[in-house]
Amino acid sequence: MNIGRIFILVFLIWIFIYTASYGVWTWKRENKLGAIMLMLLAAASLALPVYALLFREG
Image 1 (tube, rainbow, N blue to C red):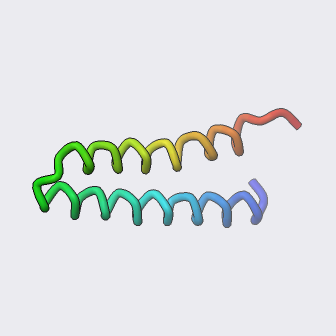
Image 2: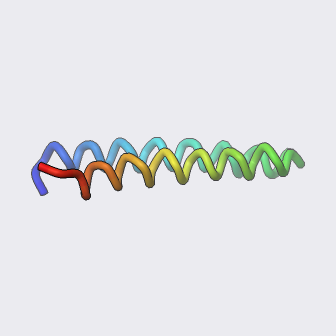
């Protein structure tokens, strides 16, 4: 892994944590469906780019 990929992974993890914490805040405000959707969005925003970054051709 080069330094560029490490910076990208750190940035993606930061986005995941920020979005997931908003999902927790939404859950505490009794908006369960919104919180679930935010958690799915957070998971997708981490999983898809990491998959593309680690398993792409070339």
